[in-house]
Image 1: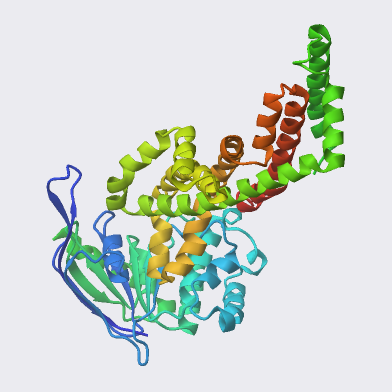
Image 2: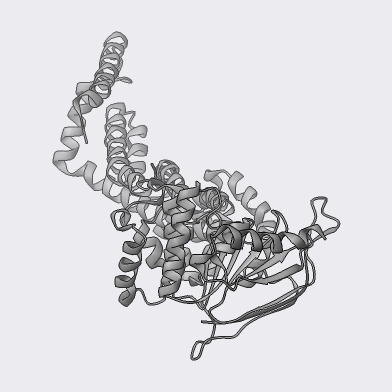
Length: 244
Length: 249
């Protein structure tokens, strides 16, 4: 498990015309403690995915610093990434997709079987991803990310475009696995209620170029958060900064 | 695999072909278009004496060697050029040049420079095919899906696992396409190479019978060799196709 400290001065992309640049992320800094579940909430297009890609090391062209404190005896922290589109390899079965990312596949397959069972995917173990529904593919992607016992788990709107009850079930499953295998989570979403339901703390991003406009701890046990009064209270506090 | 309803049109088309040939040969009554039965007699004798299998075996050996060489070198060049913009810019013109050098020129130069030896023959055939393989595989590696490569990178799969599980499966349709067209191209060029500078193989035999104006023997060798290539297509490429595509809905 690994904490993370982000202090960005900015991140720009070449703009569409090719001769200028478009700043996506502004001055942006936060710290996530070990084992903390942090939701990053922001309007679509504000650079949330870009932020996760920088943290995942997919893009090294930025100004500032991103530091993960490696867990003891582990040189480089392992990062699990649940993409918005599940990105399962269509030419590998569910089981092969999960085993592929393991560092020591030999001993860990039993654990993969256990995870798949917990996610209700045992009967799809040998199916190819195209045979699965979107919700099932998302579950496989979550299992894959947890299978490497990540020091840091990045999740990019993993439940977007699912119907309400399915998204609800997947959120419950996520919390269950996370409780069993605790790790630091950065969870990007544009859904206020989802952030309130899942996170220990919610960071609210502004429109692009994004910076943090609010940092709201959700200091209420998870099972009590869906009470209308509590929900309304946090909604208000999270919406507030967007008006400013 | 062979269902009757699927195979009868093929059989019918085969017998129609034979019938037209028979009628044409009967109408012409010429030594230059022998009857099918004369060709089949030559085939039978050739197989009984072992002459036809011997030469087909030698030609197939050359086809296999130059095929493997061309696929390996062409794929390496194509993948490298597809992945690196610098290499692509540097060598794109070379690729166009080699694509347009006539097969005959390559063969003649190979024999002139390296002598009438086996290695020169195989090299000449491979050089003719390499640019085609490279162009196809370059297309394939340009079309690699960035999403999967990012996934591989963030889960730190390393280059070996990424290549085997992420890159190769995406390239396999391109491998198969260039292997298919490669086989068809290579065996025709091998015949030319044999005709020009070898003393055995189907191409050499065809040249021999050409000088004797023995059309029945020429047709017998052609039929036998085409049959072998069709068998290779059926037993090698179709199962590979099915295997490569089994994950599709």
